[in-house]
Image (cartoon, rainbow, N blue to C red; front, side, top):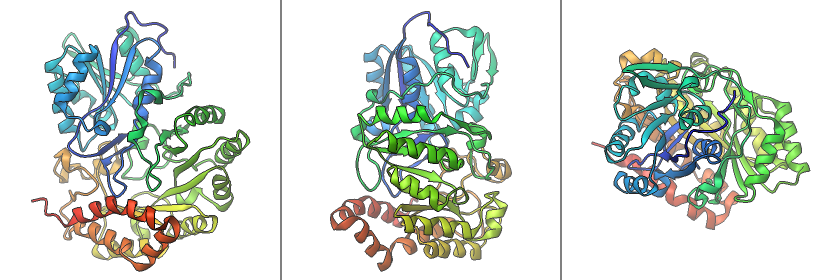
Length: 464
């Protein structure tokens, strides 16, 4: 995968996380409002794209979510920068507001506009028909970003655009990016991003893209592919050395960090050998995690790990294609407890086939395996997932309702109330509160409680 060597001209480029009325995350498969952590992610995709553009172009990263900036203030930034090109991250739940903001920007500036993300990739042909969108970037956004900035239209890859009134879609060849670059975190005000619990500045680091599993609710196989594309361990280590100049906390934003045990053990071994002063968290499947790996991760600075347990009913797990067992979830949480890692369990309510009884079983299962923290979601049919293809004819496609706290299915029970019940039953227990005090102390508990209380009490408000 070759990048253009030299652009025809130098452009002023803004890499944009568009404004929204509340805190949201738009990063790879993650497209949701800030939940119990009340935090947003550092813009990894924007920082990565910037690392490929900055050598030849004047490049600015503008995260309107972290800056808490509205579209009017954003337009002033765009004008003052003399912006030629805007590359914007968009997502399904925010797409209506995203497009409204971009249309307003287009009417107020001469800048060309490109969009990327899962939603943009899935609906590329529809989005490129909008007269204020010049390019839609497909899948991995780095190469397409460099190509459109070079303004060489003869060899575009991974881009949808209009040519002589016709829509042209050129798919991206899903190969590993051949040139490694460290994300341009120096262009980001990292003080605005705080890692959960500790409240320290942090960055995201990706070790791989893609997932071979086919969970019905996940967009990763569609967006990044079913073949995992690993970065070399030495590349990741070099990136950790570089980011340690800015932060001492990292979130390994890899959808299946623990898939290859040998890779994880080698990475942990190198972190220790190089004496990189980094503390980190990651995601994992419960069936690709064992005690040897946990101990190695802990020794290399890992302090928290999150698992997709999803359901407390085996039939539901099988129906959604998760390919795990309840016992594997129990064991993963137990290993964390034995090794001294903080655990987060993620649970999903409302899969096709869900009943009153299976909902109760999931809520009870979350309490039984008792991770340190739990997140509860409503099964959301994001475009790009198998779930979306299954139910799209039977649900409303108002995009603002395709989100983790909204019930699109019209079951004979109230999923939103079930989600509320799940949170209260999991967290409002003396046992849980006492464990938090033992883990974090009174001072940290008070700091954590403010966002958690805001989140939990939001369930009590009637949105109508």
